[in-house]
Image (cartoon, rainbow, N blue to C red; front, side):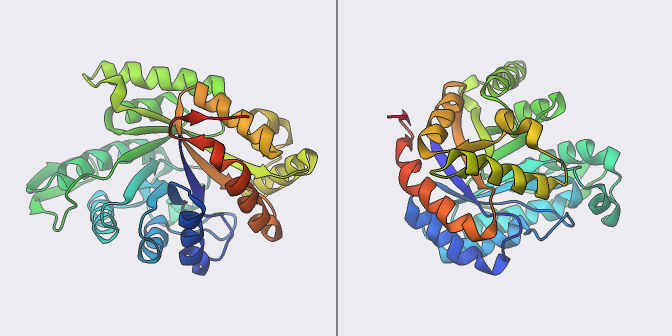
Length: 309
């Protein structure tokens, strides 16, 4: 199993280089940034944040978790993806979501909320065409390209992670994704959704092995399990401006290091080969939570499986 460390929403983007170096030194496989144009509080832009991380690190892979693809013109998104892939020497991986949690950001960029799914699907097609290299002509609902070539392009197309929970996201993943990345799911729902995605992919001639399962986990680890639960509920309720208390036991990862390892083992058994650890706690507790995860949870989660011993 491979594990990514999420740059926390609300943290100072100026800390990204140091945060990414810390993730690399601690043994994480990915450093991850999310994004919004506008949201309930401070948040990064994934392309800019990961470019800063690329310059500060050497080995760790860089994941946008997730790029809200429909807020970008498709050709511009392709340019940003290609450039970041090149400047990071092939370490960038593109996570894609449709967004929608904060409608004002769609209004601000002139994109009707109801079009976000169709725009994302078309943008993924455009990215596939442009990143393959060579001259491209494309006439879509939202994108027109007349005999243009994107330069430079990376030697290999960056892996694509598709996030979401609904059937439309599963169809998108079946067609375009290397990794299916649901969030706010139980292990049972992860297993069911991964099965559905692979069945849809098989209907398009893809092999099940072409699609890896992952899971995005808002998390707090603490030696006091009750405190961990309170911390994660408070943090996520603040991020989304809704009460997560009724959903905590199903959808959030929290507890002592042993309990967190056990829960991640359940996700591994459900098919997760990738985990994004997204620290959700008060800013003053962030270093302690990350250090505890890195020293007492991460060593038991490796590519050959998950140890809960």
